[in-house]
Image (cartoon, rainbow, N blue to C red; front, side, top):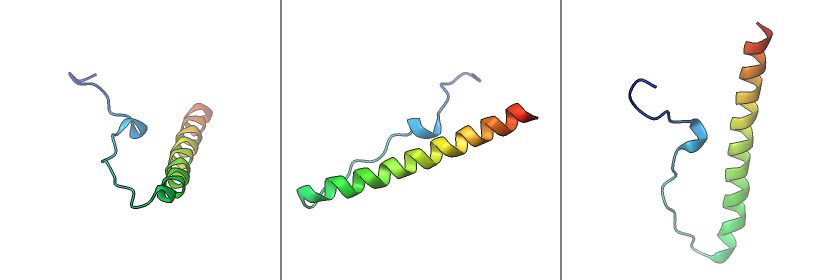
Length: 53
């Protein structure tokens, strides 16, 4: 569309990160999953609102 590939909110690439300890993996994964779930929920609600009108 418009001569370029669309950039979806969840398709953005995150920068690389360095884990200081192996135990840092899980809390970071939980936070990322929360962000993805919130983004998906907002998108679903927006689409449902558009479908209602």
